Length: 159
Length: 159
Image (cartoon, rainbow over all chains, first blue to last red):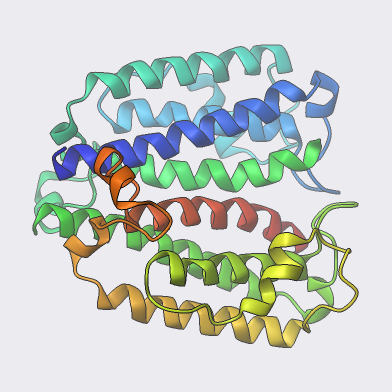
């Protein structure tokens, strides 16, 4: 196996393991549990779920895969803190968006050849990329994987 | 930059970013705050700190760097759940161990050449490694980075 191909496998394996881990916790929680705070006066489960879906949706334009699926989640779940937006989507809707998001990202990820993962992502200029070749598409997955793990550590507290 | 060198940089950059992130939170917490639970009836801050130090210490033999620095942390912080061990090291001792751990791992990481990161770690046999070349030293860092992020998401709740 070529080293680029091997590294892409290592990174994507870890991404999917973290997504599955989050999914397992989510599937074990009721909609009522999602309305609870992860700790006193901290974010609610529903907010964490919406936030992760919105952040993962941002990966679509960043990886040059097209337009976001759920641009309406940006305002309530990235720009705004929890409990500052009067009406959020229901737990049922957010579960469906999260699930769709994972499905679409997996399809898009599968469409890339190993070497394409080392091309620049869309938030870095061609000039900067020459000096900073680590700012590639694979690095987006690396950073979003640790972001997902961070919030999974919180989400599991709802159990 | 050669591709293995680039891959190693991407992974180690993320590791150090997560260690720094945890450090920033730790340095902002008092010893009293470390005695609190991250959420009601969950692990205490002190346990999370000891657990991460013990898990990172395990990386030393796994990466074939030598013997663990703090083998005495294995029993209370990996084998045992929180609140089951009568006497734990003090917050001051654990802060010092965590700091020493980061320093030693950074030295060891710097001693490896990029290609050496793609060699097998010590928990996989030479036979299995032929079939599963992703079970290399770099993968140990990848999985421990997401483990660290997971617990950092919990640790930050102590603030």
